[in-house]
Length: 484
Image 1 (spheres, rainbow, N blue to C red):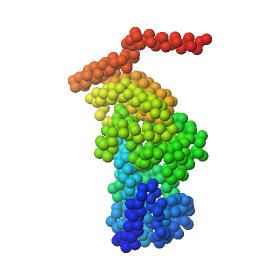
Image 2 (image 1 turned 120 degrees about the vertical axis):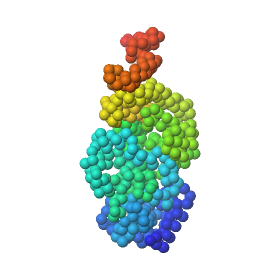
Image 3 (image 1 turned 180 degrees about the vertical axis):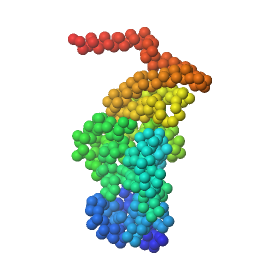
Image 4 (image 1 turned 90 degrees about the vertical axis):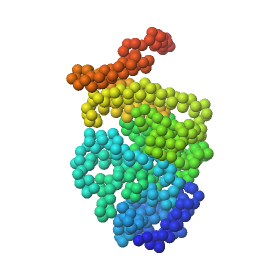
């Protein structure tokens, strides 16, 4: 049952949570003393888990007398409640638990794409991990028929697992431990605050480090940490880490630091006129995740998120507010012209025609996903190479924009994607299936139409005389300039 002591404790926590909004309201105001129940927890954990105890001991939670029980307490009937040394607790501290003190932050987070990252469980990415790469060889009590170890150790650790609770209230090994940022928790909440605020120190300085985001934002399809390290921002940060004042409670660029931004600076942290936000989409003016880049309010509407009512230009103004801490208006305006130009190039030259062509191949492909070479080719063009180009431009990483991005997109569009389409056309036309013959003719017509546009006609030898002359003139000017 919910004891009188627990009711009083929760009332204190709720009172703290309703206080004036700092990022650590509970810790900033604090409880008058460490509760008896938390004191009992500490007596054991400081012997059994010394590192855990020390992490908590260096936290603001410690200084505010917010202990183990205040975060882990559970009520009878909760899905993952179990008895631990005569106390009813929950192993998982979910966003719903954190909201007892950090209501504003949790509400913002719940409105973000981060909180919805667990929805990858039904996406193409997870089909790859569960079927193409994986098998059902990993059997646990929660998955008696087995599940894929590739998904458990890969996708789910960043995006979040659907945590399964066993009969005794403990958690299934395939789904826990897990700090995926979109974790589907037993209490119905989505997300994991500890994905960024690593337990049990919950260090604000660590949360502000770019490496904190780099745990997930890395690799062939979203190499933000690599792009950041290549960029002028990342170079300045690594050269001046000791001047970043990461522990500052307010941490405002231009006041507390001025040498470089981190991921948190641009996407979350306060400026002189903007508050901290835990909805990382509120400063992003393009969503570069899908095959064709779209405005963020469009993707928010698909998920029915509150951001559907916040237009891209408002979000861009928020980001420009951050930029203006260090850059002039003309610098910012020109940079956005460059960025939008790259998105326009990718969308119109490769993404839109590529998507149209791929969809038109549907009647000619084996219907099983990733059973056709073209499935992998198109997936890597937009999901890996196209994202690298777009993310590279968004974060000023020229090598990722070009050599890891648009060069790879173009190379594979022309040397793999188009030839595979031509092969499907040939097979369809020689098929005995009339519907496939018709689909092949439609695909051939669409391909011809696309290849005859200004963007692509060079590949079929139809570059205009004016363009050829301009190319030749540029080459001659280059030689004249440097062959002296």
